[in-house]
Image (cartoon, rainbow, N blue to C red; front, side):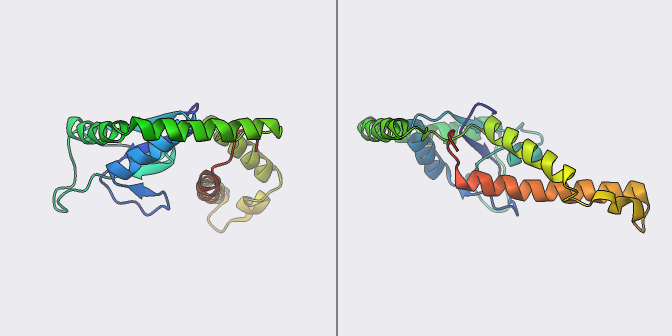
Length: 187
């Protein structure tokens, strides 16, 4: 997914994170708009046995949830792919709308290039690279605790584990913030 600008992940499980959640029709409209802007889009489907892991869902910009009966919310993989592809096909029928959006994007992109920047959205690989850089600098600045782990009442091992846990939570929140901002390649 590192070379994509938009990743949509399918899941039936409710999430407590602040990742936007869309129905398939809304998600495919979002994907069509991103493609019209020249962005690369990917869809993630999990295995029938376990679905997508939390780490895989964290790599997504948005979640696609297919409305189902609350007591039986999961679908098999083929059903989920079929429904999402059906909605994509319904969006694709409006090909003239796609061309109008594409021409508008091309004009915006040309204007951005003329001003010396790129209006295209940054890939997830670029965002992850930025976040790794930030995390390294935050560790160097002792933002996540520094030597406090050595003096933890639970001992240095548990203190380090707590620091790593706090760092992971902070970086996950920072990642969500950056993804919501939809930075461009130039930014």
